[in-house]
Image (cartoon, rainbow, N blue to C red; front, side, top):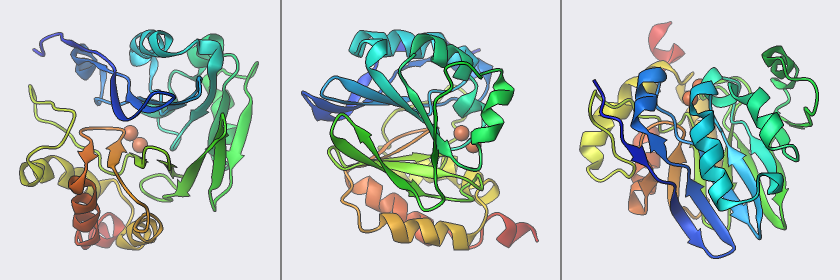
Length: 254
Ligand SMILES: [Fe+2]
Ligand SMILES: [Fe+2]
C-alpha cells in the first residue's frame, strides 16, 4: 500500500518571467497506472503544458497550474505522442484551458477526436521534421524522436532554461515504495530505466537519429515523462548511456 503524499509543484530551471516547472505528484497516483510527470513552461505570463496526462491526474494538474498562471493564459498543450497517459485528459483540458492550441504529430491529430473531443479542438499538426513553437516570444523546439517509442513522436527543447523534455525517453519504472524526482545515484537509477528502453523503444537506428539531433544542445536537464529528472552532468551521462545501449526493441526481438 502506497502512502498518500502530495508533492508540491517545483521549478526545475529558470526564474522570474521564464520557468520550467514540474507540476507535483500525488503518490496515490501510483495506484492508477504508471506514474507520470507533467510540466509547465511559462514565459512572460503565457504557458504551455507538456504531456498533461490522463483522467486521474487532471484535478492535481489543474490545481497546480491554476496556482501558477491564469488558465486562460495557457496557450498551448504539447503532446509528445498519443498514449493514454499523455492525452487521456483532453476533454477536461479543453473545458478548463479554452485558449490552448494542441500541438501533436500530424500522424496523430485525426485520432484525438476519438476521445470525444471535437468542439474547441484547435490542433496544430507538428510535421515529421519538427517545428518551432512560439510561446509569448520564446521559441520552443519540437525535435523529432520518431519510434521512441511512437511512430510520430517529439521531444521539446526550451532554449531559455536549456531543459529538454524527453517524453518517454528516460522513463524510469520505480519499484514499489521508491520514488525521487532528481537522479542522484546514476548507476543505481540505470536498473530502473534499462528495461523500459530495451522493450519500448523501437531500435538503435531511431535512437541514434535522436541522439544526433540533441547532442549539440546545451543541456541543463533532461526531463522525462516518467521517473526522475537528469540534472546537470547527469543529462550528458544519460545521453552517453543511451548511445552505448546497443540493441533495443526490434533489434532484440526479431
Ligand atoms: Fe508512451
Ligand atoms: Fe508515457
